[in-house]
Length: 401
Image (cartoon, rainbow, N blue to C red; front, side, top):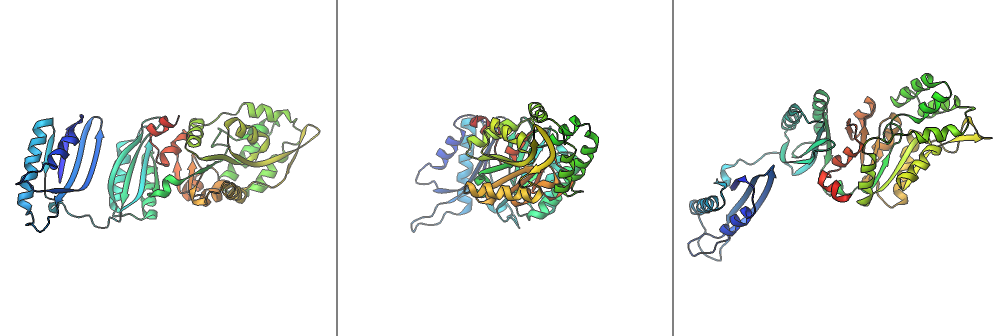
């Protein structure tokens, strides 16, 4: 194994492989078995594993002869391009036990990422027998994020051990299974209230009816899973009876998108995703919002209006906790996309069925019950941090704009 370290510059890798390819009578022929290279802030680390090439009936090259040749190669490259090149026998490197391939990606996010979060994550991974095969930076804005490729660790144990690290350090740590399925996601469903937009629309409407505090308490209990969502929704809608329909326009005009929402949607659309919203809120709010963002689909409840005023009732099917999961399945079927290739993002207990039905369910600044049950959780204020959980780097996001 040859390890090259030093300042990165053009021609280093080319010079090394040219030296390895040199064909002379007394030079052992080699074959390349493995290569990994990374550049960190202009500093190169290149590892190359080689072995003696198979011969056609000729004598096998012994290890001392091969090592002597590789050390001459190392000296030549080091002198020519000003880097350090070390050589060691691969047999001197103990084989890792229990490494079952690159099974999971662990994404550590923060503003900033504290060293104790990385230290805690790496200790936790080692503690359950996992091995870190690679680390790369995904983004430095709006959040800093690093992706650790981990092998030899079981998913549930990995998530459990890392959850305590996240809780104690304040960083977000997401776990996702590695493989082609990660980059095969093709549809994303977003909750609206407190996910796509800040705040709860029903609370804003209740404020205009003079019942803000009462409704806010019911909303909080429902989102924490303490109340049946459908019953709580009807109770909250009932207090809106008599409000002029114009208040819906007022509330809609004052909606504030969560930071990063437009970037997330725009990037995924350019990558070919189908993007939409499934809300326990109201179509009078969500349909115009979906149109303004160019979304592919939307589902929500509909407030009943008679003679220009809200009646305090609803019309049509209720989009509650199971209703959200049904909507996800309906839209996935509409676009011919398997559920395992979908992503769902939400914050409340009424999102749990949808989050668990999706191929990847992300709890975004969610209630404790949702964070505990979702596939992974984000507590950053930026919705586009979802892109890093999906494995996209900041450079890839910029290239998609």
